[in-house]
Image 1 (cartoon, one colour):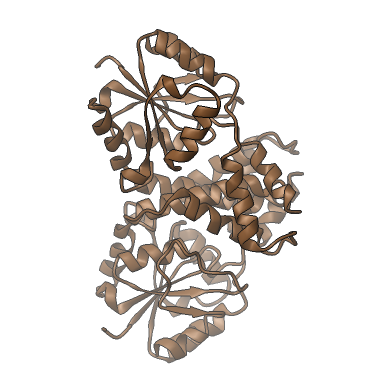
Image 2 (cartoon, rainbow over the protein chains, first blue to last red):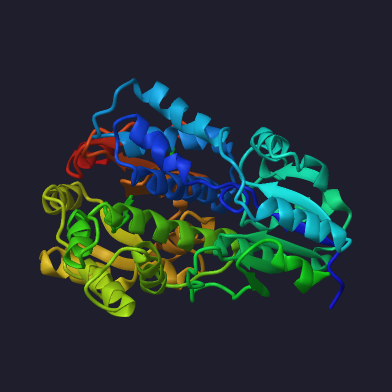
Length: 222
Length: 222
């Protein structure tokens, strides 16, 4: 097997702590449980577009699904304003506490770091910039420039092309097993960040590595 | 445009009333809101497999996502037994009240009816058989025999092949806009069943027809 030179990080929920998104729904007077439903529905819609050969931005889809999941719940503002409040929450998220140290350890091990998100570049840039770790990342990439969302093969191929790296020298790092399954099918190695002890779904190809914090990857890959 | 000869119905939530699935989670001591999250997550997983070129059955994925969404909720039985209780709920669902009369009206208008589900054939057979309307349906089809879940093009192409019909003579009928988007991309006409006044998502191609009950389709297509 080729040596891993490049670590590709997913962004939403893998780097960012999305727990505050539940609060965004509570702010509107809706149940906090809509946070998880909204994110699952947004991914379902974006990935369904990928499966049918089309793409729209995360923000565009996220606004529509916010309005859809809020339907029937009495809220304190218009549907459009409510959707904007949800989407604005993405720009206010912070990193999981293990990420910054983990990036440093991976850089110290000589690895190149990039991000590849189904969300937009500006959201990732703000998340990394606010945390002062943008400099650790060589390329901040979005599927908006790939043509289809992950887990379509072209999304991972796009990252490999920008990096000038063979897929087999890259490892995809994510908290979402479906993302790792797609990366595996595209020829990348895979690493599952399992911060809360979840079981890996039996319907997907198991990851090459499982860690409970980003920093543990350095010893596995370095 | 070619005349429509064949009406292709989605099954889960389009024909079946899925409201009792929330009760399945309540039976376990978990929040009813998990019903919607479970279905969205199951679709996300199955469609993600389609986007990456793979397939597993609805039942296999549904069990895994049931265990995943129940994690962290105190429940009254083992995770495997809880997942089985959720999946068993699918076999106990009934039809929406507009479906049986709607089928009759479409048959009276000379249209051929088939079903195409991301779920298994046995679930659809039981739903239609229990309601005494199996005889209205010429083919009960599942993506299990197509290779990929809807909204991948091959799923719709498989239905056209079994029916011996050009996609342009078929109309896909569903409550799920992502399904209709995929059908449109595969060359079918589309009809959105909007029983509860939802807005059609702006990120998808609008349907050719929108009705509030299946029976209204007969006048539109006949």
